[in-house]
Length: 245
Image 1: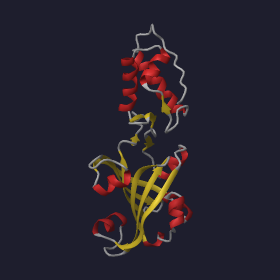
Image 2: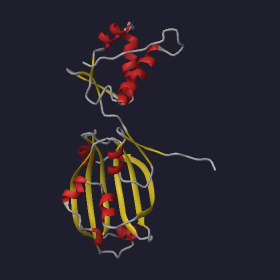
Image 3: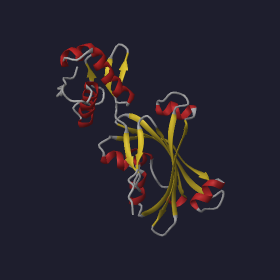
Image 4: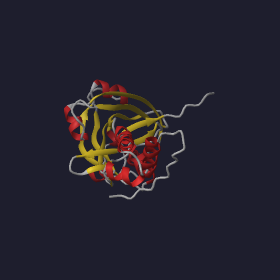
């Protein structure tokens, strides 16, 4: 069990359950309570901090509702992997996870040359039936499945090996080929996951998933990637900064 220190202000108008939940959340954010860390049961914690059991129960429930803690029968209360928050920028998921120390890992599901469908031809500005590279990858963060990434690229960018695709991000590989990614048009949405998607992502059937479609252009204006990605809504969110001009 993990030791916790609580600095509670009993004269404050801030409810004690909220003070407790905030301090446990801070311990999770700081890494003091890492993924998988177990907490004492609510009765022990209440006695330890001189609180009523309903107060401690409510504090723990706040964090369960936020997805930071999970109750497991026979195990107790554990810290789960925190939600990945990603800024909406022209970067790859792999790069963002690596920068955030989220230990990205990839399983390659599909790596094949296919004939461009009508929709792929429109996005990549190639003829219908032209050879294009089709990739499908399962991306993990801190050992947990996070996203299914499906991409189509022009044929001349197709010489990418399995080892590279599993060890590095797609944009890293494209930059290594001399592709200078300049601008992208992106659409973010949500829908229920398919049976296969939910199975791959470890979610219940019909769980909500975030979606992202992106067409990326190089510095000459040529389309070099069409991506259709789905993310676990329980583990992932997009972050946007708005500026008033």
